[in-house]
Length: 322
Image (cartoon, rainbow, N blue to C red; front, side, top):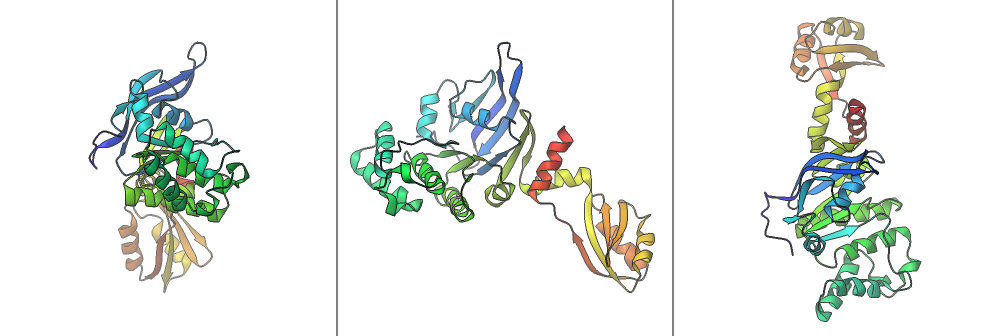
C-alpha cells in the first residue's frame, strides 16, 4: 500500500528527472523534469510523439532508471523502492498484453496471485472489477477474442486488481470507438472522484484531456513547457498571442466602429467579418473597448471572446517553444 499521503501532498513528484540514451548519453529523452501531482488528481501528460511522455512514465513506475535527478511515487523512491511502487500503482500500458488463451477471469486470477491476494477477496474483486468496466458477460470468455475496446477496458480492470492509489494510463482510449472511449473516460472520472485514485495519463486526444483532467503538463523535446488547468494554459497563450473578440454594435455602421476602435489602448487589430467586427487585443482591453463604443453612440449587442480549445492552446505552446 502507499504511504499515508494527505489530500494536499504530492503523490507524484520529480526533481530534475533526466533520461539520456546512446553510448555517450548524447540523446536527451527527458530533460530536468520538475513535476508534482496531488493525491486524487487526474493529471494529463501531453506532447508530440517522441516528446518524452512514455519515457517519463517508465521511470515513474521503475521500468527505466533515470540518468539524473530523482522522483517519488506514493511516497516511494523511483530507484530504491521500485517493488513498493509496483504494489501501490496500477498500469495500463500501450499496447497492453494479456494471455489470449486464458479467460478474463483466469487472466485476473493470475495477476491477483502476483499480489498475494487471498482467494475469497480475489474472486469477489475479479467479479466486481469486470462489472465496473462493463465486462461481466465476458468473464469466462478468452481475452484473445476481445475487441480493442474490450481489451482496453479489461486492461483497466487488470490495472485495478491490487486496489492501487495511483493509476498510470498510456493512451487509454486509442483505437476505441467513440462510445467505448466515452465509457473509458467516465470510468476514469469515477475512479478519481469516488475512490480518490490519482490518475496520471498520456493522450493524443486534446478533447479527452480537456474533459477529464484537473491539470495538464505539456512536454516537447523532453522539456516541460507548461503545467496548469486548461484555463491557466489558455491564459498563458492569451497573454502572448492576445485575445480575439467578435463584436456587434447597433446604431453604427461597421466601418465607423472600426475607425473608432483603431486607436484604443490594447487593440492590436480590427477588421470586418460579415456583419460584425473581429478584434485582436491584449488582456484587459475589454472595458476600454466598451467605453469607446459608448462614446461613439453605439450599443453593443454582442461582445464574445473566441474561445481557444485545448488543441489550439497545445499547438501554440509547442510552436512558441520551437
